[in-house]
Length: 423
Ligand SMILES: NC(=O)c1ccc[n+]([C@@H]2O[C@H](COP(=O)([O-])OP(=O)(O)OC[C@H]3O[C@@H](n4cnc5c(N)ncnc54)[C@H](O)[C@@H]3O)[C@@H](O)[C@H]2O)c1
Image (cartoon, rainbow, N blue to C red):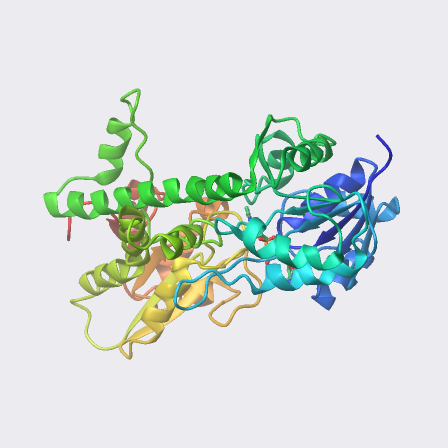
């Protein structure tokens, strides 16, 4: 195959690793972003997001001359759109980034080009939103311009490995589009590549995340039931999962990220009369920060006057720096809005943030309650005996079943576990 020139629009958690991967496999890649900081950093072979080994790969790709950063697209063989698809405040898909990115490439399209939407999108986006914009190029869609959707399934923290090894779904607006997209990804994908139509691919991506969201909601509901019943949800789940056909998910203080907390709403928006379980699950998970706040009140009820709470972790999952849609941010807001509660947050993965306290001991000083909100690996080695000395009251609320109960109790902490009998 002749060396392909690929123009990737949007250089975030998906677009940048994808660009670097194609570039290190010999393709000429032009990465385009409207954020000047991203372009400036990339021009120097640097990155502004946290993802293991991505900095090394990007540096190699830029040094070799295969990856360049630009603010505007260029003519190319392939255009990949990987811009955000967030939800609005009223839980509707915000497709404005996809519209702008698609409009941006129209002047650069040539006969024989391939356009791939990678952004997670509601059903019908390729057929009803992207194609009408691409038609402005004057090219015959499906014959002179090939179009499709290839959703991304990578796990933050393991993106580079999963880009190569995950199975992929490719949905074309016609068969030849799907085949051309498959041939492109074959450059670096070792997993299977399954061909379908664009709308089916869109639904698959949303449903994969919805499946997980619904199952976490079930685990959260079970956690509340177990607390009321006076048993430990983590033990119940562990034992249930010994059954060969049962896989109960893990409960926690909520669900976040730009996938699980977002994609189900795309299905609900288009099918409000049908997506009942999906909607209830979304609301169950969105309610968890409120549930955690109730638990905090219960734990601190005997302490008079103002109380101080220290939260460990603010990302939506462990070992990453991403706080998008994090339920911990919601919890922090809820606590911050209370006059009787003071809050400090410590998350070594997150840089500057309005609530962030960089020094753990300062964050814990005079605290009445430590809350383990995110199970970052670094929290395995917390200096607990030092922390215990500076706290006002030694309460520890573990929302992830992550801490060593015995160790904490030995240090004089009262240990409270989410999903265990009410206190
Ligand atoms: N991050 C993940 O783990 C993940 C996994 C699967 C799917 N997705 C999906 O992939 C898509 C991209 O997600 P992400 O996490 O990479 O987002 P991101 O916010 O990390 O990056 C998007 C980038 O696009 C840029 N951008 C926005 N509009 C632009 C435009 N018109 N032209 C050029 N650049 C533009 C932004 O400046 C930003 O740098 C979303 O639809 C997301 O749901 C993400």
